[in-house]
Amino acid sequence: MKSLKQLILGAGILAGGLMSAQNSDMTNMLKVGLNGGVSTGGNTAANLGVDLSYQNLITPGFGLGIATGYNNYFGKDRNVNGIKVKNNDFGVIPVAALFRVYPQQMGFYFGADLGYGFIVGDDRVAENVNVARPDGGFYIKPEIGYHNRDWNFFAQYNKTFTGDKGQIGDQKYNAGAIGVGFSYNIPLGK
Image (cartoon, rainbow, N blue to C red; front, side):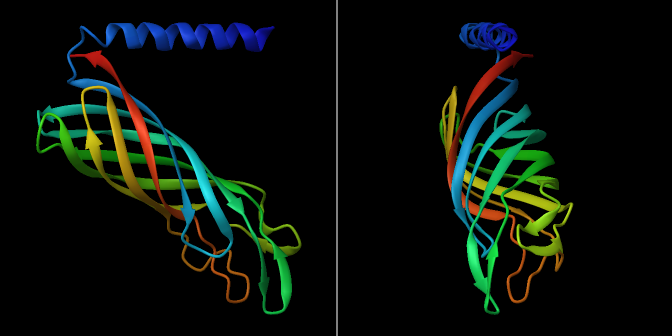
C-alpha cells in the first residue's frame, strides 16, 4: 500500500510538471530520460540507465547544469587465461557538470557530461575470482542528437575510467558503452 501511495504521488508530481510545461519559460529545466547501449569492453555485455539532470540556458544556444542518474552494466561470462570468469553486474552513479550547445531552437545539438562516476554493486569484479572492483573514476558522456521544446533524442558514449584497477589476466575492467537514449524536458520557469 505504501508503494502504491508513493507511485500515485510521483505520478501526480510528474503530471503537474508536464501540464505546466505548456506555459513555462524554458530557461531552467529538469531533464528525465532513459539510455541503453552495448558495452565497449570484455567484462560487460550491455548497459541500461536512467538520466536526471538540471539545465540552465545561459544563452538561447548554450546550457550549463548538473547531471546524475544510474547506469546498470550487465556482466558477461568470459574465458580469461583458460579460466571461465563469471563477471558481476554493477552500477555507475555519475555526479557531473553538463554542457549543451544548441545551434538552432529546434534540431541538431551536442554536448557532454563531465565528472566522477561512483561504481556500486558487488565488491568483486567476478563471482568466482577474488579481484576487487574499482570504486569509481573520471566520468565522461559526450552526446549528439536532435532536440525540440519537449524532447531530446541522442546517440552517446559513456565511460568511467578506472585505470588498471579490477583487471583479471588480460581482461581489463570496463565501465563504458555506446548507445542511444532520450530525455523529456520539464520546464522550471525563469
